Length: 273
Image (cartoon, rainbow, N blue to C red; front, top):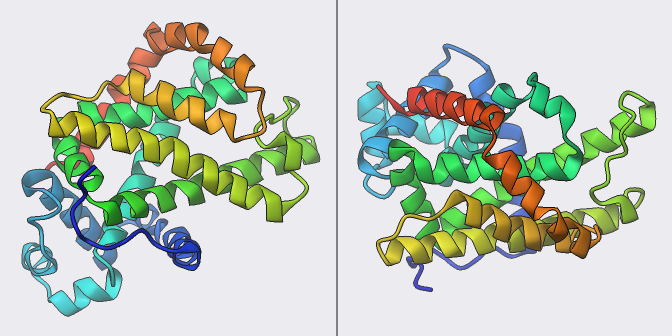
């Protein structure tokens, strides 16, 4: 596919470096009423209003009534805004999902699928966010940046869940990555491969659909990502795919519709003046 020439895909050392930067900086939106918050929040709104490509560091500074130097101090790379925005999407999902009855009644694979479905729903079914999404999937560099943020999030989630199981904090076995949970040197590359292949394939499909003036379907994107992801995770691929009819019923449930509505409202608020 034709991506914009914003740079080649990052090498392995670049990917690890970008992921560590995302890890450190993605907590910014948890702190309120700071100059950094204002800069990032303003950037998100400008991206939604006019697109990522048309928004410059100078225009962000002007909207914040500050200097370009200060904006670049808080975001040395423009892609860092996308890193934090992606993290914010997953936090919106977790906030809406965490304390629901649905969250307590599903297993880890079902949760993986539903989280992916909610994520793709936010990317493609929110008018303000979709303007940003189109810019992201049209750019190799931005897609790489978003995937790096997702690798970091999946790694954190997997590590936390395994610690909970081992400490007895939760009883349900966390089945993802079960074949190599004790070997980090094997676990980390597997997570990276699964996220790059699963999410990368879905973003490639999104770009293809937009290039042909079609709206990507969140359900199809989720099925694609889930199929590739579970195939590389150490799970029984046939069993994972056999569960798809049940997962399709779950994503059309009234309980999930309520969560979708809440996350969409939260995202619209995040991206609106």
